[in-house]
Amino acid sequence: MNLYTEIIYDHIEHNEEYEEIINRVINECFEHEGLDKLKLYVCITLTVPAEIHKINKKYRNIDKPTDVLSFPIFEASEIQEMLAKTKTTESKENNKNKNDNKNENKIENKNENKNENKNESKIENKNENKIENKNKTENKNENKTEKTNANTAKNIEEIMNEGIVQDILGDMIISIPQVKKQSKEYNHSFERELAYMVVHSFYHLLGYDHEEENDKKKMRAKEDEILNRLHITREN
Image 1: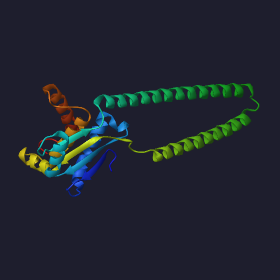
Image 2: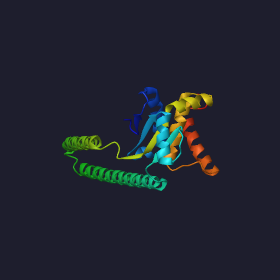
Image 3: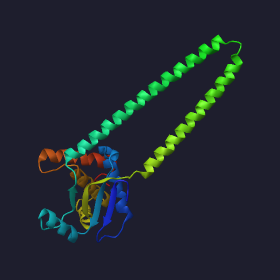
Image 4: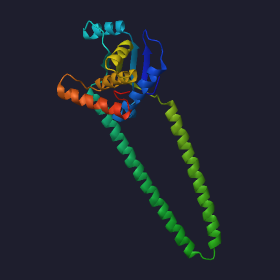
């Protein structure tokens, strides 16, 4: 399983080319829409016309095969809510880090001023104080390093113990023979047609549709943006 995808083969042989195209597109979609900050993944089934025909008839009451089917899990508003919560959490963490850095700078400046006053008032013990302060600074840095290493180890352990994903964004079902057929009909590459099927289905999972002309334009603009970012054009 890739970071954002689970690919299932149904009456289709395993193919690394398919997976490379799919993962490139899904990774770009997730990162572009900010879903990489959520623990979600997409289940993608690659199948044949007879199987997608059965699914189309069962779940959509349409008695014929098609090229791709999309089954979202979340409403568009739910996804936006999850993204909004992520942004709020990031903003709080950034503010906390800023405050922590500000407090650290204040403490360091305070300590520097104290050391300067102390050195000025004890001229005779200047060399001894320098050595003493140096030792204190080295000990302090060693303690900071030990603390940083401990925190880093803790964070790595937490990340390793933490699950990569926690929920499914939705299901895609793609008819590979139909993708091949359409790529020939439209006179462009198999890569371009499969990439388009994936990005088209992805935006259905996010709640986009193309029933109305305005909605179709919005969805098409999203699809084209992803494909252009990947340099996958109709000429490919």
